[in-house]
Length: 451
Image (tube, rainbow, N blue to C red; front, side, top):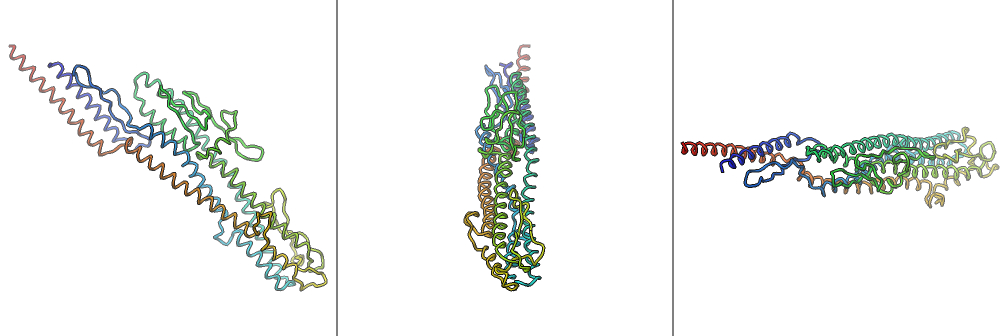
């Protein structure tokens, strides 16, 4: 009996020491990113011989951990898309006085003014200035869109580099965790690190994982293996013939479409904006520039200038790149073909009026919009895209925050709880030490009785 009292007391002291150490470590890591609160798994010894610490475990709910990781994928997608749409919206910002919309209004107003005095060279010169300013604004917008595409490529490369580092590190951690468990080592810090990397992979590329019975994880992206036990498969980027970005798996397979279709992760958003959304607005800007030029040119060539010559193209552009090459084709104010009849020069303004009427024409080539209306639709469409994405982002942020809060309530360090645990283990230590003292006195009494 006395031996068991000493065993119980000594094991109690050891458990209390473990508990104080674990609680103290929890407190020390309260601000450590990715740290999961530790707890003791205590096991009773047979024959009432006390207790031992079976293991120091992580307090974690696997279901919440997986749910958190899964919901980070759409969050990463919506975040990057919001940032990119914000930049795109800034390119088409028409609040200031330097946008296409203002230049287009000035252009039409200059024709209106010319209609009041078709022979006035000062008014004609002003028209050419307004036309030149409009063409310049269109070229600037095309340049800004192209530059935005160029700037996104390094961002994608940077994320892919981080992804490859995470993939490689997870494969290394798999190996260490597997053999650490076999040799009964503490692998909690390694597991915390791996969980952090898994969450990052989810946010970056929409990766998912399954946990194997030996503690290792297998990581996949839309069914494509990224990590299998200690083996990793790297991603790389390439440019296709039209300048679009391709994501290549293990140097062999193009998985870009899988990423784009998933709408999960940062990389999917980057590629969607760069190679789909920006291209869409470049194509619309090209249509706008081409139809503006074509319609004005067509009517301008039906008139006569102040020299009595038939009008020539007012604008010029490369059909392969209308918005990037549109320029004024007239330098001499006298070459503006304002008249519809050379016999009525110089006061005839009928061709000017015909050009002005183009402003109100709904063109099938512009989806039934007027020239002004089509450009307004471009601006409106960008705003609508961002508004819809922002709503999705806000909702996803709420979902992720809710899951994370629930996760932290279980796995995060709570200083009040740890303070209570420290007091508990302190009393446990004191009580166990007191038990040793009692057992010692009983032993002394028995020895004296025998004497």
